[in-house]
Amino acid sequence: MLLVAVESERPVGCAGVRFLGSVAELTKVFTVPSHRGRGLGSQLLRAAEQVCRQRSMSTVRLDTRAALAEACAMYERNGYERVKPFNDERYSDRWYSKTLVASVR
Image 1 (tube, rainbow, N blue to C red):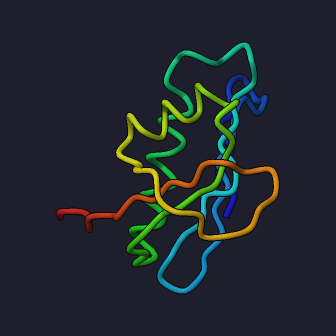
Image 2 (image 1 turned 180 degrees about the vertical axis):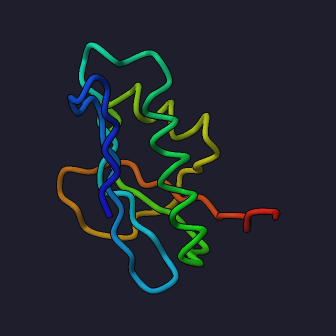
C-alpha cells in the first residue's frame, strides 16, 4: 500500500506498507525537503497505521538506520520501540515495532 500526500496537485510525501500475515512492515516514510519539520511524516505514519488497523494488522514494524536521526526520533515519538533485528537487511542498524490498538468506534 502506498499513501501519497499531495499539495497543489504535487506529491510532497509518501508512506509505504507491505502486509505479512498479521504484521505490517513500514517500508517508507518520506517528505520532500521543503515540507519537513511540519509534522507531515507523523501524519502519514498515523494514516498508514489507520489503514493497518482497518486491515486487522496487530503490529507495525520497520527497519532503518541510526544516521536517519530525524526519522528515528519521529518513530519513537509515535510509540515505536526498538526491538531485536527481525531481518538481515544489510543497510539497517535499527529495528522498531509498535503494537496497534484497535480503533474505538
